[in-house]
Amino acid sequence: MKKILGLLASLMLFFAVPSWALEMLSTQSMEAPRTYKIEVLQVTDIGPYREALNGFLKTLRDNGIKEGENLVVNRVIIDFDVENGGFWDRLSLLGRIRDEANRVASAKPDLALTIGTPATKYARRILELGKIPTVFTAVANPLDAGATSMSDAGTGATGSTLHIDMANSMKMLKQIFPSITRIGMVHTDDENGVTHVQAARDSGVPFGVTVTSQQVNKQDRIVPALKPLYNEGSGVQLFAVPLDTYYAMRKFEPTNDLSDFAIERNIPIVAFALTPVPGAVLYVGADFGVVGSLAGKQALKILKQRKVADTLPILRQETPKRFS
Image (cartoon, rainbow, N blue to C red; front, side):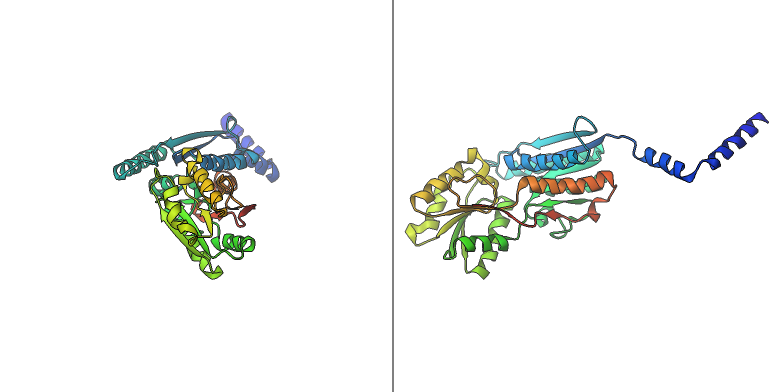
C-alpha cells in the first residue's frame, strides 16, 4: 500500500511541475557536454593542405569545438612520392586510401574530413557505406571527386571547393594586361592542374586569349617545357601558374626556375593559385584557409545541428582573392 501511495505522490509531483521547467530540464539534457571525434584523411602533406586544415579547425574553435577540450582529431597522412610514383605506386596508393577509409568507417567518428581530391575520391564510397558523415576540402573540381554536380556532393557528403569561376580571373588579368592574347601554362597529370588549365583555356576564348600548355612529369624540371611555349619571342606573352601540386614540391623549385626564365625574357607571370611565385605581378585564386573554413561551417551544422551531410551544398569562395 505504501508503495502505491508513493507512486501516486510521484506522479502528482511530476504533473505539478510547470511545463517550462520540464522543457528546461530537457534542453539541459540535450546540451550535455560531449566530446566530438573527427578523422582527417589526406594524401601527402603540403603547405596548402595544412592551411585548409587550420582554417577548418579555427572555424570549429570559434564556435566552441576545441582540440584538447571537447574535440579529438586523428589525422592520417598517406605518404606518396608524387614525383616518382608510377602506375603500380598509384595502384598501391589507392589500396592504402581504401584501407584507411575502412579503418575510419570501423572507428565510427562523428565526422570524417578528407583533404584533397585523391583522398576524397577514393574514400568517400567506403565512408558512405559506413554511414560516416563526410566533409571534403581543398578539392579543385568536385566532379573529379565523385560529386553529382559542382554544388551537390552526392550521398553522404558535403564540403568546400577551390573552384573559382575562371572567367572572373581572366577578366582581372585582362584589366591589367589588355593587350595580352597568348598565355602559356605548364602542368602535370595532377587532377587539379589538368582541370585548372582546361578552365583557363575555355574561359580565355571570350576575352580573345589563347592558352597554350605543356604537360610535364612531376620529377621534371620546368625550363624545357617553357622554351617551346616562349619560342624565341613569337610564342606566349605571359606565363600563368595553375593550381597544381607540382609547383609546391622540391621547395618550390619549379616556381623559382619559372621566375628566372621569365625575368630574363621580360615576360610577366600571373598565378591563378595562391602559390608563392617569385616575380609574379598578379595572384588571383581561392585561399586554402578560407576554403577550409567553409568546410568547417558545414561540419558545424552536422555536429551541432545534426544536419545530414548531403542536405548541405558544396561551398566555395565566391570572389577570388587578388594580390598584385
